[in-house]
Length: 504
View (tube, rainbow, N blue to C red):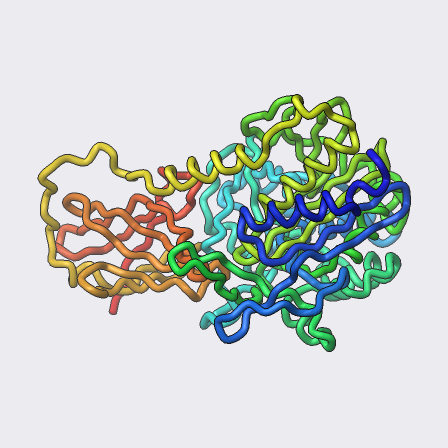
């Protein structure tokens, strides 16, 4: 690849066309090659008064970088592992419960004793995501890194330890809490003092509140969702998620993050040589369908690894409503890329652009290049179809009537892990407002038969992100509805979370 492929007009036009196709209003790209970083921002917009207006944007624009935040958490742990004087008992194979004895308890006693630091960082604990369980700062009792960690004991596991890759954000929050507990400083202070300051990453922040406080020049990118019905963008809020610390609450710019990728390519400080080796050592098979010329994907410690056309590729991606991000680097080529975008479609765009440049770098013939645009369009169709799937395909007609009137299904239902659900009647349907969650959502219930319902779980921010789940009410011997079960874990269709009705 010519050194300036990512700088020519043809590439600029390619990026613009891809952004338009996937409705991404703003994108920032940094390409790192042999010690030099080139950064560029494409058409950054901000929404005001229902109009999109072009604003000044530079490579120092700060984006929310959801799951890319995890690489800093794993690196922070590596610094503790290196410090044998201060932390002689901390190693990748150290059981987490031995360090957080009162706080880290899983529902299975053997798992509590077995799960190590490496296990929580490579997603092999047997614990599914449970992303809908933690409470946001506006809740009556908002979650913190400590309460999020302590709540693990109340959440069901679905696999034995070290048998399946199950992505889990909460356990990265646990890792950040472990750093705080052992170091006696805030996680943000530790990252800034030990990682960001040494790398001169002055425009990187933990949490929306700190990013906004430092936003004197209006450098924070606003997130957007494309509304298909209104054919317009909707502004999305910046997420305030202290409970998600360590998992995905960092704001950074591509120019800052390029320094982090350069460090990974060069394998230099502040991470030690041994730390670098451990961070990118494959530990778990991720699964999923492989693509042509791609090896199966493996997971290290916050880094995904695979080979393509004989070259090793290391990276990660992530998304949350309004933002998407991607990082990749090829160690042998001393080449890397960072892409941040401010809409849900940014992840797709980032993948298409990154693979275009990787193909150019490796001189892959045109006929051997994979059509990522077509693949993602197919995946989107399949994803929507799966979300629209009836969770009760075996239902019979006519349905059996409910054993009790709709109004008698209302009340406050409690689950130790998911806290309170208040069931009401709204517009003739049972309804739950769960916007007190970090990933706020609404649930409306459609009757299926007897005490079985379809729970329509709708994202509070992106109303098009709705999945259908099984739901069931149970009636006790006295004729009172006393339990509600909902399959709230989208990837575990048969895992029912049971709530018990509280006495009024």
